[in-house]
Length: 359
Image (cartoon, rainbow, N blue to C red; front, side, top):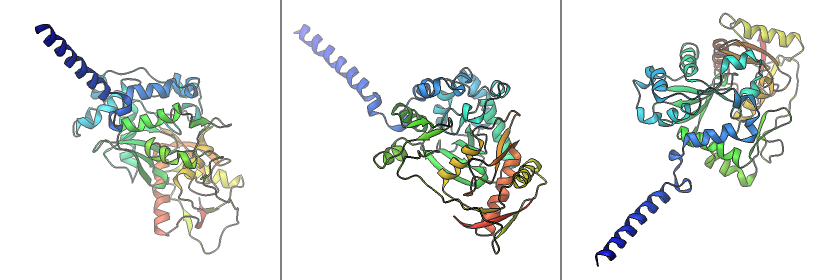
């Protein structure tokens, strides 16, 4: 009888462990339980990324103590429970080795680890946050920049609630792309694994979207695709029309005091034949596509520099062929604030025309 009891007890213990293991399996986990370490390693080691500088220019992992110490000014006033995914991320890699990337002269498209963005190091996170708080009129103190495009766009971690937002500072646009960092990283890893992220002939990221995949890409896979494949049915297209200066439309005049290099880039562009007559667009994917087409092959070597383009990415004249210049991030922020203010003040909406009158 005692032997039977022992056998039953062993079976009970074994069944308990089987239930525990099955409940923790990846197929049954909620989005907020996805392992960041596992997902970021998929991204780094995926064949699409493996031979790209974005992978081999990643810095070594940090210890939890190093991460917490560097982020201490942020962590001190926030709910630490939101930061688990963030700590997991930097325990895999401390982001792009920026100085090495700059010394080697890599264009932006080569350092982007995920579509359109590279991973900031922990020190760059703190430094960039400080710059954005000083110079951007749209930045919220709880936004911690994790991924940057070097064109003025960011993927940020909201320290108030752990949500992930994409920010287009020059257009004052933002939207939530994931409920937490774990889900965001997992979504990108899943798209890579499923073959939905690829490189086009220019070495820039495309994301394949079809009607049957749209739900999964935008809701399950989290990432709101910066690029749409030319073969996709729902590609956003704009007929580009070049006009002489329009009469009876608003005129944009920039104050160049805080952005001399931005203004110089506009002067260079207009002197080379770029139009002053511009048509605004508000589709976020097309804006990102324009910006990345204009800046993807640009190399910005100075610290805290970003790529500026004219015609603007938020116009139908923007994109490939735009005149570019590397300018301080603070100047891009100043331009973004003035441009957003101009759009609001003059009620310039999607497909409305305006003139770039000065500089």
